[in-house]
Image (cartoon, rainbow, N blue to C red):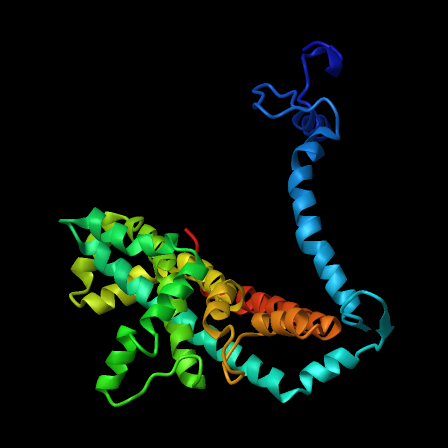
Length: 324
């Protein structure tokens, strides 16, 4: 046994600090290819265009809406008067606004439920089709290529009081359909067109989710359960939970915001007794009624409602979603 110093017995293992430093600098024994920038500002230059779009078209208008909601502004921009929370009190105390909020909630629930349910049903049926599958899927998806204003125009032709086929269909059951005049007739037209427009989007994602279910899982479910409904409820539906949760958020956003062109086409230049969503009321009060402060307060209230719905969805519903 020799008295060789410990430092001379060979290289010692690097400390944790040295290993972390080497990993951070990329100087490892098996270096991983990583993007290297010569200057720290270079990555920011790549994301600057997207950041500019977000700031200009989202954050800046939102800040302007919050600021305008505390003022009564001249529609021609000649002045403004600070009124504090008066615009919010007027909106929340207005029966017409509360009625619009109620219809928005009703419209959101019905359109989301029907669009998701019908889209899932068609996806399940399409997943079982063997002959002519591509033609069947193409016909269902093609509707999504139609722009919302065009969908509204097509829907108006179907619900036309003089020659619309849906008007004649309702007449067979003794009901005179008067879209644009009767409140609930207009609501039926809005819901029907909005659901028809959104079904292909849900169909695409549900079909992709169904086709990603492993064949071994399907075969095992076929052995364990003879009932098709039980196999779907206990096996297929849980595997579709991530897709369904994503589509739930997308469909709620669609009903609250993206249906604006459809509503505009149907209720424009019609009598005042028509249903509308909160987004369309913001447009009417701001651009038609020239109430900039009031419409800004309504938009802020809508932003708060959407933020609260998003938090609730991720807080409670996502717990039931299992990934992987």
